[in-house]
Length: 316
Length: 248
Image 1 (cartoon, rainbow over the protein chains, first blue to last red):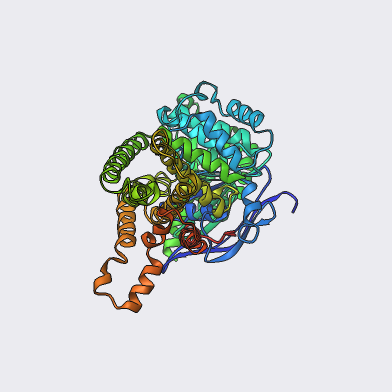
Image 2 (image 1 turned 45 degrees about the vertical axis):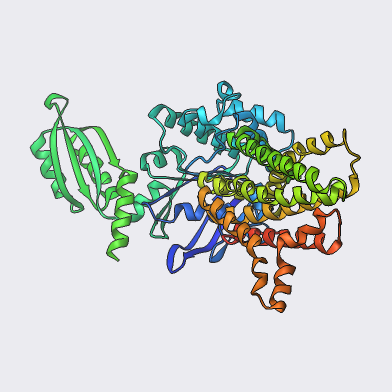
């Protein structure tokens, strides 16, 4: 429990009669990066605003670093570094003055040293004396990340941290998030599923205020069940291999194409039981003396998992 | 002492903004015009009959009230509405800072600029002192009343600013509120005497009149502080309505 940095129990938020968040339960531990995924209106920002004490939940509880977000709000906010989706900054201030201002509000010890450290970590050396309003979107995002990091937070909450950035800036921002994640719990929302699969240890999939799934992408893939695809590249008589594969009862569908100019064949095997099929294929190849060049289970992309979870939820 | 960081940010922001210089120019223009006309009036009618306090300063400070009605909404319109529009209020609320620290930093920032404007009017008594003997105590009382009235106007303007993210709406709303304060005791000719008594008790300008005459009374000082505190309370409630937080 020592490393449990974010704990949410039944967080619910209604705006009038509209349910923005319904009974969110989850935990995030030290060193973990957890991605919040969901379409617009899923409740991601609402959840983040509740955790940062910007808004009050209608019901439920949450603790940041062991401090209750309502009863011990000041202390819980001391543990947080928050980066809002719109990167709200005072455009008339210079980067250094802005960070100094935030440092005062966050009660940062050894403020000057810490500001230099964060400027260095966020690659802001060339922007220090510049007016924020004159910086590029990428640099503003860095400034936003720097203000979040200023108090060396145990919990980093980032709302769409890479939105509106160009590919190079996105790469830089992801690098920074990875770098900062080791000693803290990081919760970040994104629309880019590829980004979540690159950065996250676990994902939380949300829709219409509800958490639909929480797990690693691989475990979510397994838990969804259904059909999996096995990719087999094998050297052997194509017709015979095809016949033997179709004899395996667990195989649902087979597709074949030439591989390496016809010397080998690439089979795509659709099955509900990939472990069983893998064992059978290995056994047959050994008996027949066929060479297996590749045998891999294709994992569904996070996009496919995400869409399947959403579709299943809608079908309920 | 986090309110000091907010105060510093507010003051820097005022002096970095062109609107502050326009406000200063307008204030100096109108206040100097009032001073000039009131001094002429004093020279023509009162010079040999009454003191500077009764013949000049009371008229001058009563005229300056109208300048306050013009400039305070322009000073306060951006205080919270700009923060709301830029979403920086969201960031401030995520920091470990109490709503009261945020509010008092803002009020203090606004009052600092207001005091700067008042400081500029010191030139008039300084010039006069080369020709007349200035009675400092009643003059200081008038300035104290003016500052307290400014505090009330600033507090009401900041409250209105916390209601909207549109600066124009905030300014117009504050104009409406201040003009209401001004008109509150105007209908004395038709009002019931009992109603009039209550209206006079609540009228901002009527509480200022003794100060303009150089008299400081606790009930009037308390009135300005209590009404200002009333607007601080409303502002805090409005800021905190989206969430629970320890206000004080």
